Image (cartoon, rainbow, N blue to C red):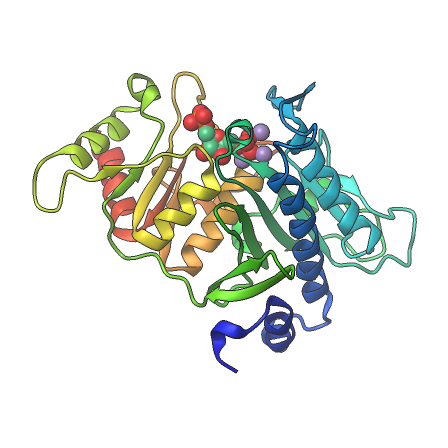
Length: 334
Ligand code: AHG
Ligand code: MN
Ligand code: MN
Ligand code: MN
């Protein structure tokens, strides 16, 4: 069968034996994410028709106004993973604390925890612009059969066993890695099946797109200001093109296909940056590295940072390897 006709279900089964741990648990977990993604996709697509647009009226622990779809997607992913008894713990951008699943049940032999951003790009929901879901999977570090602890969630990104995102765009895609490259699957909405449409995705080594919220320019560190000016200079293949959707998933996805750099640096408004290390930066960094790209906080590899709290934020620079290294050079020399 040609690679392109392969369904996600077939792909998962075929690749099951290449996972480091082959109990089938990780495959079942990715299958559950596939299911939840379809449910959320269905709701995102009819968002304008039903009462799902707009604010939910609450704030999450990070002080952001929750949108109805933030809450809906959060519930659907948690429900799917919990009902199928497939993980031992979940942490989410939209939950104050981590969730321990079946913590009293010694028969819960599940080894994996999931960390997620159920709906990325919330501010784009009401205006019909692409949003996404990001997930990150680790093996627990505490003994199987005991309740999970915070240590199971505060692992460095380099310990991830899988990570991925769903993009609810002009078409819906699921893109993920289990440490053996990155593959993208497109949903055929007529039959509800994901097909392998983008095998072995790779960031071009160089690119000509830079993605940053330039409204924050005067608040950026000098190194980032200098790099942005470098992008705008008329020299060689520059000036680069500026593209910023405001959904990390969509900006990342475009840059991975076309070549580019995404930046959410620290600023006087967000001294540690805005993006969350565990739900956004680490999974995207893992995908980037698996696709021959790079992810940095300006000075250090994202995946080597030791997390100290669940909702920790981090400056994030990610994309084509040569572009990220150039931005790091400007940070170092500023
Ligand atoms: P979320 O919707 O999950 O809270 O994430 C929003 C993030 C990210 O997706 C996006 O790149 C960034 O915030 C946009 O922030 P600005 O509006 O400050 O540019
Ligand atoms: Mn949010
Ligand atoms: Mn997000
Ligand atoms: Mn979110």
